[in-house]
Amino acid sequence: MSHAFEPVTIGRYTARNRVVMAPMTRNRAYGPGASPTELMATYYAQRADAGLIITESTQPSPIGQGFPNTPGLHSPEQVEAWRSVTAAVHERGGLIFAQLMHAGRVGHPSLHEERAVPVGPSPVRAIGTVFTMDGPQEFVTPLPLDQAGIRETVADFAAAARNAIAAGFDGVELHGGSGFLLHQFLSTNANQRDDEWGGGVLGRIRFVVELAEAVADAVGADRLGLRVTPGAPYNDIVEDGLHDTYLALADALDPLGLAYLHVSEGSDTELAGRLRKHWNGTLILNPYTPDAHTGPESLKLIESGAADLVSFGALFMANPDLPHRLRLGGPFTAPDHSRAYGGDHEGYTDYPTLSAESAA
Ligand SMILES: Cc1cc2nc3c(=O)[nH]c(=O)nc-3n(C[C@H](O)[C@H](O)[C@H](O)COP(=O)(O)O)c2cc1C
Image (cartoon, rainbow, N blue to C red; front, top):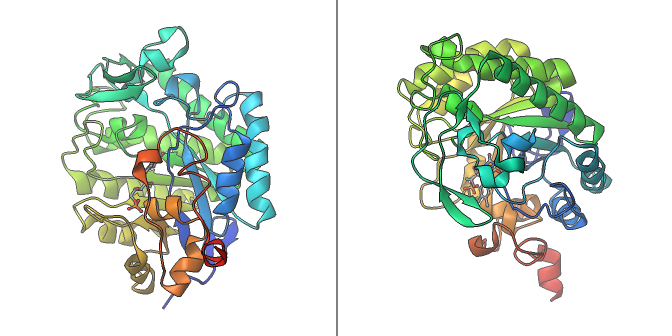
């Protein structure tokens, strides 16, 4: 039986425990040209006791940006700025992967230079709104990626992954969920293509598989993870034949030897168990917790063998020393979601550790 506080293999690394900081967009990349700041270095370093930190969504290219003040990994300026973040985490002995996220059709022209129109698998507009500098705005109809556009997008991801390594990251995670570009290709509504990247299951998983292959070639499969959110309807996603899609994806990617598969579980709680059987590598689970957030009880999933590691979002936001608190069984500070997106250090770097709390 494995335990949450035992080391575990993540690709070429050994994580010191199995408590993962889940990726969380915090919209505080106020540095020039969508660069991270010293405040972000402090925030991540505070959480370096995690077995693995996965950063907030980071755009691999300007057109991939989906929200205001999110950081990128496509310019020398950004690479330089991220170095302070990775150095601060490494100084505390932590491991940190950058989450690469391309928003695809749910980006917005107002977030892009020269108001460039977002791209997607097909010219199908998502129903809903995107948060922009001018408040929520309706999604727009994306420009469909042609074959050259697909190749260019894949090349952008590979370049961003190389940039991540140059910036001192231990690896990258591809964001394959939450209705963003990869998820759009996997879906049965945003992807209406009738070429090799659409149609049946093998067509719809093809973009993600090709992307994983290209990024693995660029930085090594053992420094690459993939996050999926099967069945999550966020950003207007419909997935008919859910199990078939994700089991085929797992089967196609398993031979690559990725560092991990990160499953953010939805209401279909059978699927993660099935994926576990189709995946020989390391599995990180963000369990389904409707109307709540992942809590200490989820560590049992490691003991039962359902997952190798468990990722915590909200609880890690509010408890910088989360592994320590989990080991003691609490207490836990409640997250303040009103300060999640944007703002300053408040609700960001001012959550106390347990020792600071006791001293006070
Ligand atoms: C403020 C906030 C920002 C998030 N941003 C991201 C993100 O950038 N990428 C991602 O994959 N998931 C993101 N998520 C989802 C979390 O990684 C996680 O799956 C979700 O919070 C559920 O886990 P929890 O119950 O432990 O919080 C975000 C969640 C929160 C609360």
